[in-house]
Structure formats: C-alpha cells, structure tokens
Length: 529
Image 1: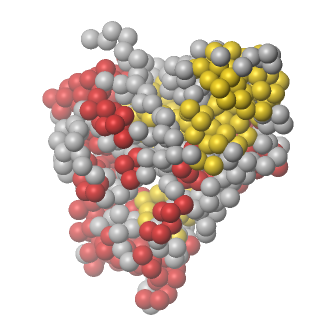
Image 2: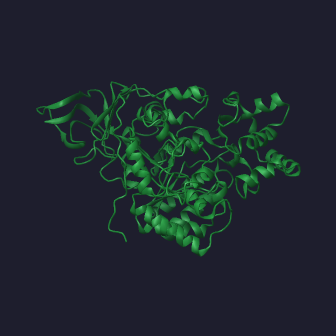
Image 3: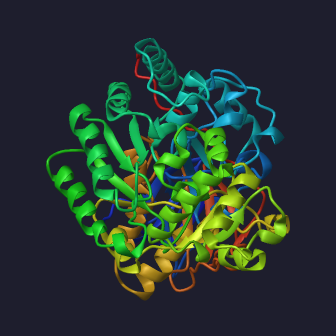
C-alpha cells in the first residue's frame, strides 16, 4: 500500500519533456511508482484531475540564512506557498559557516542583526547539524561564502591575501566540501570582496572544481561594468573548468539596459564552447539590495568603518554628491525596505525623506548610511521588462527568488520586504507562461526543478522519477497567481493546492499545515582526502 497516491494528474516531470497524464505512488518519502495506478491503494489519495503535478521547486539563490529567517521563522511560509521545497543558501559571498571564530559573522553580516542568534557552530558540519535540529519546512543546502571566509582570515583589513592565508582559505574550503557544502559563492560587488583579484578567485575556483562543486557569483558590477564583470566570471570558469552560476543576472539603470543582450550572448557563446555556465533570474523589474552598492567604488574601499568615516568628512561628502549627481541614478525614487532606523522611514522614498529635511536626495542617502552604519536595504524599479522576458526565455536560465522566507505576520515589524519573497515562482507561471505565453509550462518547470537540481548536484531531487525524493507540487494552472506587490508584499501566492516535502504533505487544500519535513542536503563525499 502506498502512503500517498496522486491520481489523474497532468504530470510535468521536470525534465523539460512534454506533460502526460498519470498517477504517482509515494511510500516512505520516495516516489516508487508512476503510471496507471487506478487499481492501487493508499493511506491518502489525492485526486489531481485538472491540476498539474510537478517536482518541488528548487531555489538556488536564497538568503533565508543571511536574513536569519531559518532561525526566526523555520516554517518559511512565503517559500512553501510558492511550491519551493528546496533552498540553497550561503549566496552572494555571505554564509553562516564556516567561521574562523564566532565574531566573524558580526562583521560579515550586512542584512540583519545576527546578535539575536546563538552562534554555537564554527564548521559547516556543525552549522548543518544545527539546521537539522531546527527542522525547516523545506530542504536546505549551503554554499561557502567567500566574503565570510575572507573576513575570518583578513579581519577588517581590505587587502590582498598572503600565500599563507590563501593556503588556509583553500584548506577550509576543502574541509567544508567534505562536510557537505555544495559550492563556493562570491559577492564581488561588496566592500570586503571588491579587493579580491581575479587570480584569487581563480585559485579558489580550482579547489571548487576538484570537489565537483559550483562556483556562484554576484559579479563585480551590474551597471556600466556588466560586460567586464561577466567576462571575468567566464574567464575563471574557462581556466578552471568549474561549474559556474551567475547570480541574479541583470543590467541596472536604463542607460545600461542595452548591455544585457551582449552579456547573455557571451554566456551563450561560453556555453556552446563547452563551459557549464548558467545564470539565475528573479522575475521583477524592481531590485532589492543594500544601499551602499550604489556609491562609487572609492567610497566603500577599505570596509564599512572607513566608508562611514569618509561619508562624515565634509570635503569627501561634497565630492561624492557631485559624482552621485553625474551617475545617472535617480536616488529620489529608491524605497527604504529594511533598516535599524525609525520604522517611519520604511516604505518611504528617499526623495520624500530628502524633501522633508530640505536636502538633496544624494545628501539624504549619505545621512541614512551614516545613521544606519551602512545597513539599509532598499528597493528600486531599475530593470527592463524586455530584458526580463529574454532572461526568463533563455535556454540557460534558472528561476530563483534571490529572497528569503517570511510569514504574513512579519508585516507587523514595519519592514517592507521584496515581493519576490512571496511570489517569484508563481509569478513566472502566471505571467510569463499563462498570460504572456513567453515560455512553455514544461520549460518553466524545468528551470525551477530539474535544471537547478542537476546544476547543484542534488541527488535524486528535481524530477518526478522512481526512486527520487517525493518533493511534489500540485497546482491549478488556471488559478496559480502571485499576489505580493512592492507596496503590499505580505501576501501568499494562491493556486497551489498541495505541496509534499520528502513524502509529507505540507500544503494541504491550499493551506500550510505546519509540517517541517525538510532535510539537510549535503554534498556526497566521494572519498576525497
């Protein structure tokens, strides 16, 4: 007898192949039978007539660790309501392990106040054991954050690493792979990683390739520097043969939108030459990022404390305001999302804050950064919808949230989170597949399940296939819809009837039942030494 029997569904298996009608039998957390199972019996039978049955979605660019959501809200409801059953964290250079000491995370953390969490681990193995103890609603894997690791070795110093320090870093990366890390991530746009040379990243990527991991990168620039930044990432992959994932590829600012096509062409050319390279994309023209990355490089060079000192200097301030005016960025339309400052500032545009204080928007940006010690997360409508369509359609793209898991009650904090935290995956299916017909159901599901699972080496996940973990989503193709908006992001998506995680029903009749059946995913140890 099956534990769960899904009958009469339209099966999209995650491989990209055409959908077909059939039944799925699940037992002890695994898919054990697919086909005509009308004579079979089960403890729980789900009639999926008129619904699509797909693998659980895999979000390879998730920040539920960096925003501390896995500790503060392990249900991660905004993700599970999207059909996400697996998240990969440790992205964009920031991971919660490995730590050379417990204080490292305090200096490396730019998204949330980590002092609210009891850091009782240092190694990746210890961190993953802690995540297992917490029990999440989704499966969890982690990358090694280059910035976190670098800060642990170099401290607050912004400089190149010595040969001894590089040796130490590579040893920690090797140990972390043996303990289950899936890859290495970099955030080369951020203060303490900007100094890292292409040579440094190439040395580390060689280690990643030796262990069969993925190198993911938030490239050095996504505005006028986009092409050079993409070329650097591709060059690292070409020289080392490492599997490459470019995180949230985009061209920021209208005057840079034209660069997106050439950036994608470079990726396609590299792919055709044999490189294992993909990029992920979140389906919104509104971005969400820390405010200081909009400043010129010379301002942030040397780290956060040095940056704050520069911003306080009257002569530097005058020079900076002049450069900000010439940058072409419309600072007045930036919306404050998350900060440690007065919650009355949240949801306001910088232009409104500046006008109330009788200041220029550029002055208001500087003052906000000083007052918050650099920890301001913002939203900006700065991307091209035309580019978004092409990115979603591209044969090498992967759908991801670049977000984190929340519940609706988090609205009470006054923080204005990005709608991608609640709606990214359903938005692709509702808008780009059903409404705009820009990509097929099968290809979209492949970008959400089979492709990312294969890319990140998630064994026996990402497909509806015998012997695979029973991570399954059942949804109404006519009703699936994102509801979150930049103005009102705290709204769960609708149209997903059932979500099964490792054989346990987690969304039932469209509602989360509190189950936390997620497993920690560790990279398979192949006898490395």
